[in-house]
Length: 191
Image 1 (cartoon, rainbow, N blue to C red):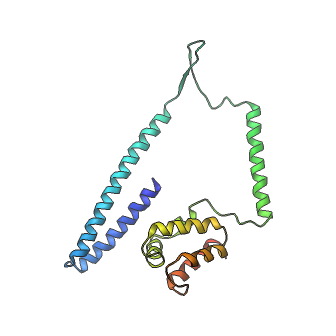
Image 2 (cartoon, rainbow, N blue to C red):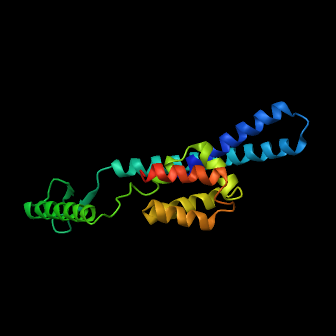
Image 3 (cartoon, one colour):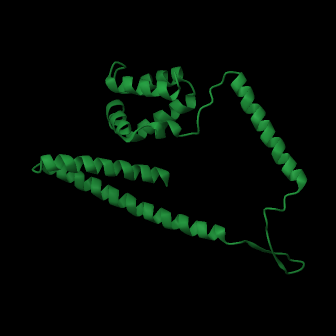
């Protein structure tokens, strides 16, 4: 649902820009057709969002209902409860948590970079940056931008991310958009 909301936000911003330009140039029939297509895309995505939300709401209401399991021996219903954990199960959970914490501390001591949650690099870009980088670095392909940003995030270091970026962009590294993306990566990796 988040991806759909992002697409709606981008469509809305695109439509807003097109309408602002149409106000200045009302005789441009091609631009009018593009704005109409953008409005149709926005309407379709809003319909999809409404359907997804209705489905999400239906699933959520089903999950709130208490499950009833029938015991075949007694034919008596009983409600499954989460509080029925035994002490050995809770001890195992604590041990797993301790092992996870130890692994994280070892990674820090070994000098590995701990990156934030997946997808956070793309979410750190402003909407204007997304449009600009898509247009200037990836010839208007916003899906390619998402793929490249996800890959740079997975690489885990500034040097690897910039190296990868320089191999996939459609402009030179002296271009202002590339330099701005480089600045963004430096801030993201705190360099």
